Length: 71
Image 1: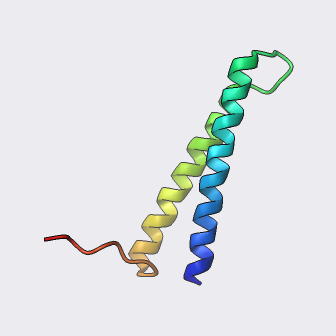
Image 2: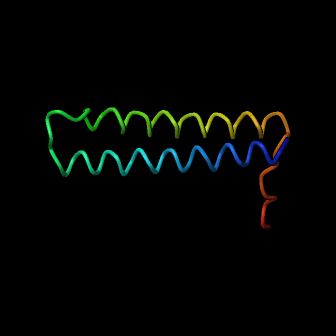
């Protein structure tokens, strides 16, 4: 079960990076026929918010544990 969550998180990070580079390409081309850059930036922000919420839920339920304090 833990491996599934880790794979899901890595996939979401790749999806987030993909949308970032798609927005970069659209910004550089400045083609009016392409979808707007804000569409891909919005997907990136929504994905990062979903990652943070998923991590908080997993920590709160005890599925994953954060690193112990170093001191």
